Image (cartoon, rainbow, N blue to C red; front, side, top):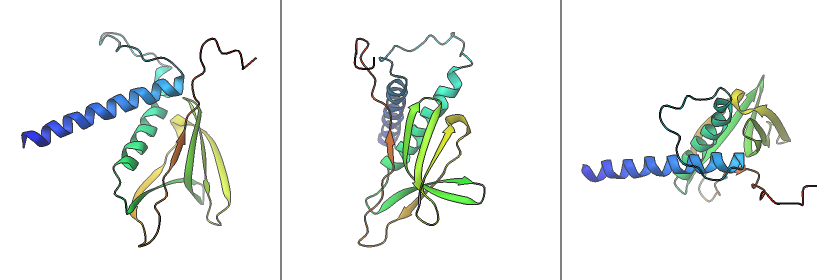
Length: 150
């Protein structure tokens, strides 16, 4: 029993570290030390963290999949249901969701991260089939002295 508790604690720490690293990568900021517990949260911080929490949850679900399972991520817009295959994060507050509609047409949705509601299902892949993995892309941080963006 103690070994299971130890495993849960390590898994929790790994997820927290991954979530923090992802948020830093999205924001393009270097790693920083934890803020003191007494520091109040800034109102603007919430919208940036919502996107990183959503992405962290999706990545954790996908990482824990067995080889014969896939994570199906869907987005509903009115009557239309889209299967999302790629999430691009141009900024911490914006997601660009790319996927296929019911007729297999490529569709993109640009939305505020705070307003995105995704449906996530773990499904078994048909025998002989290859599981589809969701692709999450974040911009790579630019070095401070990078002159290539003039």
